[in-house]
Structure formats: structure tokens, C-alpha cells
Length: 226
Ligand code: DC
Image (cartoon, rainbow, N blue to C red; front, side, top):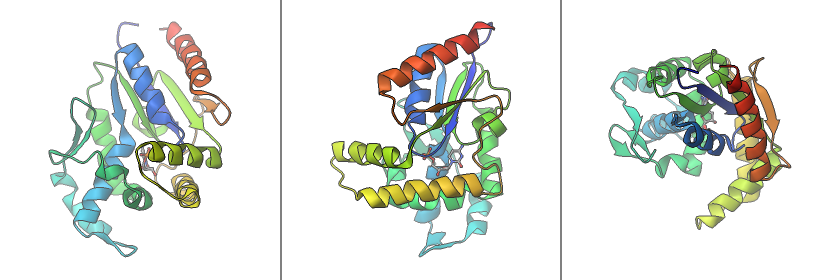
């Protein structure tokens, strides 16, 4: 292959897409982009500006601000919102609970897709999200679609947060995961669907090593023909 590949990793919330995309980026020397972080940063912005409060979302105010909001990543991969590191803030439960509302707005998606496409392709990209293989890069060289049982995902998320010293309620995490699954798959603009040429991996019963081996095999096979 005379250029570096574009690898799209889509799938349901909390299925480990970012770990997969990050590992592939390291392995193949690609730029890693977490598109969920971009929607989270916009959600955090809307909350800070009080465009989202008590279940009401003043989406037109956010749309009007879109051209003055800068989203990017620093060298460590931390998310930057207008130059400020918001990596910790965007992972909060509050942001997780509001992000589906923000990411379902067509104008928001349009702006994010343009931004995602404009990020240099020269270095090759491993990008994770919901619409990467279907909308952002329909011509991606490799498309993976990651699924996993909701209870397994909720348990993993609780364990991750616990390891960071954050105590959370399992049922609340499960509820957030299932409602985001519903909203991601039922929104009108670019809902979460598997691209016809994506390879589905269900990691509910796989260890990290098993998953890595399976993905390595799939990606190596896909890239062989280039
Ligand atoms: O991957 P994540 O859980 O951090 O994503 C946060 C939310 O953003 C998720 O609920 C759906 C939305 N999202 C999206 O609509 N399209 C993407 N490409 C990435 C994320």
C-alpha cells in the first residue's frame, strides 16, 4: 500500500471501540481520532452555556455558536475545547446523559463530519464513532463494527470507574448505555448502523487478548490486498 490506511471502528456505546482504534493506530502508525469526544465536548459547551438545562435543550443557540467553537486534540490525545483541556469533564455522567440529544442535531453532525474529514488523511487514520464507515469515510480501507451485551458493557464501565476511585450505580450505568443504544440507533440523521462491508465483532465473551488477536487477523487480511 503506497499510502497509510483509513480504519473505521464503529459500534455501540462502551464496547471498547476507542481501545481498539487506539491500539490499531499505534500498530500501524496512524493518527487516532475519538469522534465521540467531539460530540461530548460540544455537549459540555452547551451545558456550560446553559443551553442544556433541566431537560430543555436550546439547540438553536448551540447551532448559532458552531462556527466559533474549536475542537481539537493535544499531543497526548486530550480533547481541547477552544484551547482548554476538557478531557476529564467530557467523561462525566452528566455529559454522558446529554450527549445523545446534542449528537442527534443534523447541523451538529454536519459540522463534526466536516471536521473529521478535514483531519489529515496523509498520516492515515484510525477513527472510532458511530457513523465513520457509513458517513464520514464510506471508502475506509477497513471497517469494524463492535457490539457487546449491554450488561457486560455496564459491568466493564463500572469496573473502569471504580479503578479510578469513582463509585457508580450499576443500574444507572446500564440505563445510560441502553438509552444511548436506543437513541443512537433511532435518530433520524446518520443513525448507528453497520455498513454492509463492515466486519462485526461481538466481544461479550472475548478477553482483551482474544479480541486483539481476532482484530489483528482481520485487519492484516484486509490490508494485504493493497
Ligand atoms: O463514543 P462515545 O460514547 O464517547 O460517544 C458519545 C456519544 O456521541 C454517543 O452517545 C453517540 C455520539 N456519537 C455519534 O453520534 N457519532 C459519532 N461518530 C461518535 C459519537
